[in-house]
Amino acid sequence: MTEDEARMLVGTELDPQKLYMQVEGLKDVLKLAVSGLPPQSLKNLRDALEEVCAGSVEIPGMAEALEIVKEHSAEAPHVQ
Image 1 (cartoon, rainbow, N blue to C red):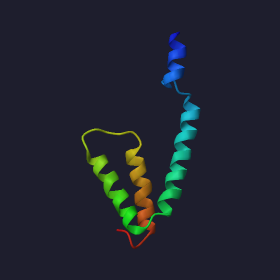
Image 2 (cartoon, one colour):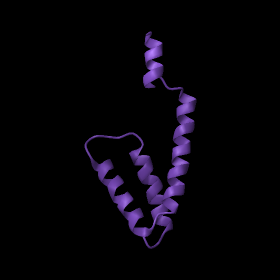
Image 3 (cartoon, one colour):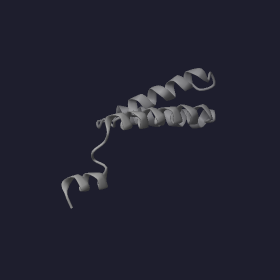
């Protein structure tokens, strides 16, 4: 097996445009999912993301996910 074949199998080589489109799609799905959450679930998600973001290890995308959840929390006056 060549190195290129191995990369394809494990998915370590990503097309930047494809990755961007996947991320944008996931953000849209998150916005849609968050908008349908009941108040307590939205608060729980926000609290969990804040805890992850406050941790010592940075996880790519978590800060942006937290911002999306905060935006939707701000739109729902019952969740603050």
